[in-house]
Image (cartoon, rainbow, N blue to C red):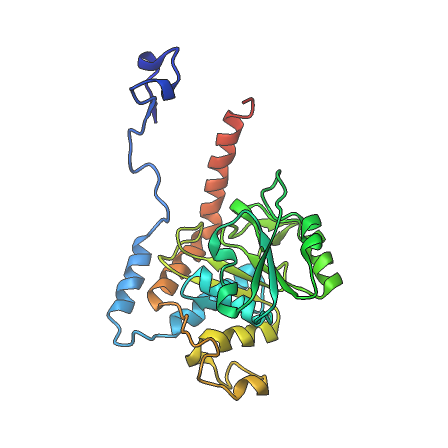
Length: 295
């Protein structure tokens, strides 16, 4: 990066018709990092005759559970689908209410429309930009079924306070962890702090082209999430609930939300190197903040 100090001396860049900073190397940083190993695996799968290859999906889910420390992981077509499946699995139905932060992206909460539920917005903490636990409690009613918390820009919500409230009112907690892959809350990874979590894997810290991931330690939530949108997996090998098995093979949401195997292959490569790469990102961000700490 080069600064045109002589050309802009004494004048802020926003008041000058010349660039204050010029990137001399357009290749200085690219994300995600795609390796030759990633490319080879994609080509290997492309040349396989089976485009419904489940082996890669299974491996990605297993590796993701090991990384997060959960019992179950389910790949999805995108993070929006993963949140929708999480809502259904938490029992959100017509007439119910779901609380979400007032400052977030639409894909955190508009899934309520698909389930006939109502969105209720709680205020955010101005310091963290995350949902304010005190305002959550003010918004709870007899119809509240779940709270969707967003770890905004990777900053963890106050999960101790939120879980205490949720337990008090017997409400499920869904973590929208789309910004927070690998973020820590009191030495625990984001995604294992509520009842279920959903990750977006598109244009996020862990990017696989397009995809989402649902994780949980709750077997009932896992089975209902499978039943919602994974018809090929909706059977006795994954489901133990006899009531659910009555509908085996027919997704209860009337949709299919499976991840493409090529996205799973790229996800495996990204996950393999993720922790070491994020250390470099953290180092760069800390360097940036150190330089402007007096401003």
